[in-house]
Amino acid sequence: MKMVPPEIKVITTAITIFLVLWTGAALLATIKPKTFWRITQGWKATSEPSTAYFVFSGIGTAICAIIGLVLLIQPYLHK
Image (tube, rainbow, N blue to C red; front, side):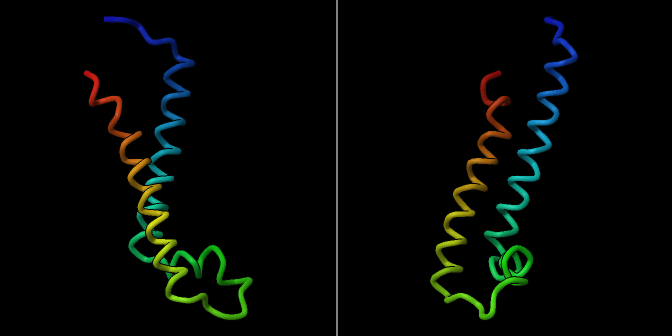
């Protein structure tokens, strides 16, 4: 069994934490786009955007969530 240097373990852990946060935020934005909009943009808006905005936002965040999930499970696919 190969020994992994501690620096690589730290970097790998940091990347994994980032991907978990990325995927979680993307899933929240996909499932609840209006809530995500209120949290991130609602405080500076004077009116709520159209339904089309939330539909396209949901599609874009679903793509980001899929990318995050693929990157999280990718190391386990090559064993």
